[in-house]
Length: 442
Image (cartoon, rainbow, N blue to C red; front, side):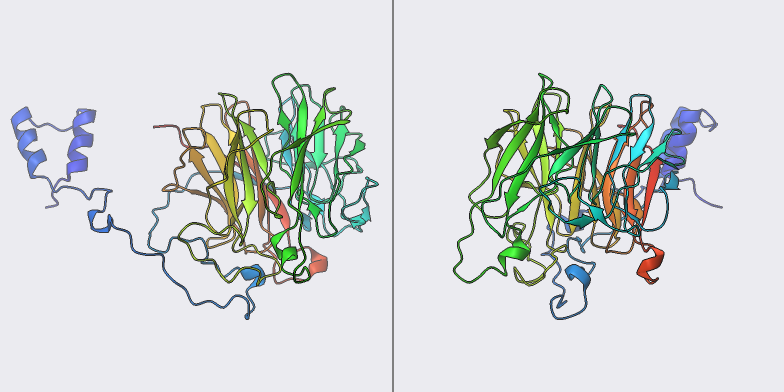
C-alpha cells in the first residue's frame, strides 16, 4: 500500500476531504516522509567557474560563440512550460525589428527585408550608403496575426520603433544617423538628419533602442560616437584614439524638429558609453539605461572567452551593464555589471504591476530569446528564474523587444535563424512574435 505524502496530507486537509480526526491527522503528518527542500546546503560554497578549453580564435566558432560563454555550468534547471501564441511577421528573410503599440491597441513592427534590393539611406549623413528596406507590418489582434503595410522610406536593421502618447511614431536604426517621424500611423514619414559629428576616422555612431521622454514633454535621443573594440585592434600602433562623446538631441514639438543638442557626460575611453542602449524611466524619476560592452570591459572574476581583440565580431564577450541618471540623462552613474558574457540586446519594459522586465539575446546555450525580472526597479534581478522565450541557432537571432498590452499580455518580437543550412537567397532568418503572460507576483 502506497504511503501518503506530506504534500498530499496538506492538500487534502485544505480541501476538507481527508476524514481524519485532529489527533490522527497530526500523527500522520509528523510521520509522513519529509519532502526535499529547495535549498541545497551541500553547495553553499560555490565552486570556481568551470574552465573550458575552446580555441575560438583559431577554429570555426562564428563570432567566437562556443555556446558555453556566460553559462553557469555548476547549475541545473527545473523548467516550467507555459502556454503562448506565436506568429510570423511577413516572409522569410525578415530580420531584426522594432515594435510599438499604437493608441488604439494595434501593434506595429518594423522588420528589415534582407532579401530585398538595398536602397539609398534617406539621410545625407549616411552611416551606410546602401541598406536594406524596412517592411512595416501591423497587427490588430494583439500579435496573433500580421498584415503588410504600404512601402515606406524606412531602412536599416536593429530598428527602434516608438509610439508617443499622442500617436506620433519615431523610427531609427543601426544604419541611420537620424530619426523618421510619422503622425498618421506609419503611412507617411519624414526624415530628420542628426548629422552627428565624428572626431576621428575610426569613430562610428552607436544605435539606441528608445528615446528619453522628459517630464516637460521634451523628447531626446542619445547619440554617442566612439571606436568599437574590434576597430581599436586594427588602428596603427601608437595611434591615439579620442575619447567617446555623446549628446542629447532634443525635440520640443513632439518629434517634428530636432534642432537643439546638449553634450553629456561619458567616460575617459574611446569605446562608446552608449551601445545598443535602452532607456526606461522608473516611478521615482530615475532613468535606467542598459548598454553593451565587450572584451575591454570583462566581468569581475570571470575569464574572457579569449584574449582581447582576437575576434573581429565579438559576440561571445559582449554583455550588458546598467547605469542610472537622476538629472534627465545629463550625467550617469558608473556602469555596474548586469548580464553575463554572450547576453546582449537588453531591452527594458516597466510593467503595469511595477516589475521591471529585461528581454535579451542568449548567445550561449540555449541560444535565442531570454528574459529576467526585477521587483525593485533594476537594483536586483531574479537570475534564479530566467525565462527562455524562444530558441534559435546562434547567429542572426534575437534583438528582442517586448511591449505590454492594455490587458497585461506581453508581446515580444524577435528575429531567429531557423533555416541556417539553406541558401541565403531563400531567406535564413524570420521575425516572430510571441504572446505570453508573466506569472503573477507571489
